[in-house]
Amino acid sequence: MTVALEPALRAKRDTGAKILAPFVTAGVTPDWLDVVRAVAAAGADVIEIGIPFSDPVMDGPTIQEASARALSNGITPLGAVAELADLDVGVPLVAMTYYNLIFHSGHRRFARSLAESGVAGAIVPDLPLEELAEWERAAQDAGVDTVLLSSPVTPDDRLARICARSRGFVYAVSLMGVTGERQALSGTAAVLAKRIKAITDLPVLVGFGISTEAQAVEAAAAADGVIVASALMRTLLDGGGPDDVGAFVARLRAALDA
Image (cartoon, rainbow, N blue to C red; front, side):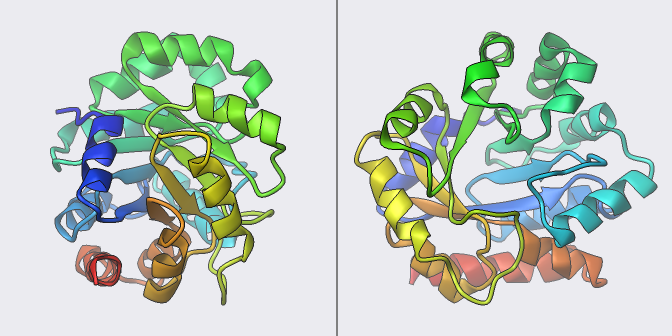
């Protein structure tokens, strides 16, 4: 069952609470669907599902390792999407994928596969605004929101165009570089979140480098919520299971609600 992305996030924001968006790489472990269920039960408001890819240019070592492990387990992009049809977790699912996979599959086929598996949105980080139109049409026709990303160096005029075409929420990339755990949150995160919120009413979520409860609280202060990825996947890669990831998400939820 598809849970619509933007209405769910707006409803959460309107309560005055912060949005928590954990990330799970599809196929990273044989019980990865149980990981998604545990994340939802622990208090996630939306769950980002990473579609494994052999050349994830935006991702740092941890997500790269998770993707490589998933591929070695035999999962395929469309196979991963198909497995999501078995989920009914009560929160929106958003696929994070690279454009090569969409192009290889075909825009409309890939968009339909997401919709048929209950996926409400898609993040395609290597598809620039100028080349978005064909995927954007296919996604819209299938009822899939395309979430666009902005960075600390995005100029004001381009930021306005990104916000105008993004659907579901706007992804604020907190720093220049790849994903990964950091010792401290970048100071650019709050600045970017404030810039975005000044020009759009869409929910604004900050991602990249958020690894601890304290960092999540700090990032969410200027935004509507946070995306946490590498720290969760590191738990799985180091031998943890659904209960361990769920416990981590529960701690993040408690910190954001305090």
